[in-house]
Length: 162
Image (cartoon, rainbow, N blue to C red):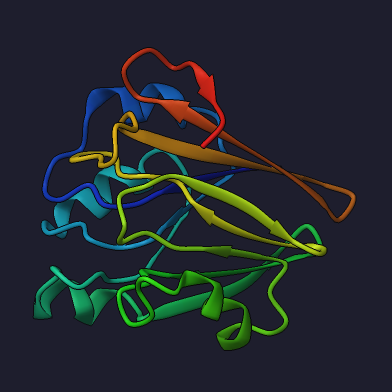
């Protein structure tokens, strides 16, 4: 199973997102969409689970959650924007104690850290990246309870390590 991870699109859904997430089985969106119709556009690619971010207004918050937890192919995922714990994103491990993979956004900085058998992943910002990183998304490959995370630059589709 391939799971697309995306965050921080801030009102603009770049065409490259459709190319890089083509063929994923599901999309997890970690907040800051700003325009509700963009979630509908993402859902054209694959089924979508989305959380709201700190810039998302009431309309978006009515259709999304503060956090989402789900199991995919035997792997427990948790998704949240992360603004409530920033800059201490490692505290998400305590907030989601049973999650194998915790996906967050907010910082606009891609991340892929392993803490024992658990992952903390920020796909990076699909728009407005920070700290010299490219605009990006990530893919979680899930097979037999194991997870592999890759980040992809929107500029050229190249794999990179945060």
